[in-house]
Image 1 (cartoon, rainbow, N blue to C red):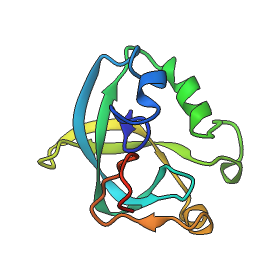
Image 2: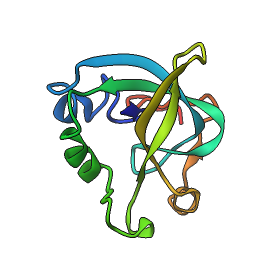
Image 3: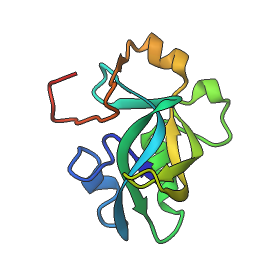
Image 4: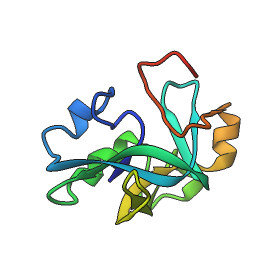
Amino acid sequence: MFVYGTLKPGEANFQEYCASHVEKVIPAIAQGCLYHLPLGYPAMILGEGWISGFLLHFPNTKILESLDELEGYQPGRPPNENEYQRRELLIFNPNRRPLGLAWGYLMDPNLVQRLKGTFLPNGQWFGKSTDF
């Protein structure tokens, strides 16, 4: 799973949702554009920039059920009823060498706009920061 927001190590939801399940944490990047939402968390959309995050390795896919619930995603629900969409993304190491495909959560750009997301040109989000 590629994480770039509250599920990153050190952020609000890592301990509760990931810490006891994760086998490996690798610094990683993915192509896209990152936005801070006034709701207090970020949103990723497809784009040409680079987003910094982590690749979390889990022993099985059981974790997806709780992560999907957190992210407002239900696989069988119409996309416009989900807050995020879980998609396979090509993930890279920080030197832009491919690491393979991983799940990640994307938000529809129209929803980002309706939620008044603030573009983060450096592709990094820190929940504890006030510099948005």
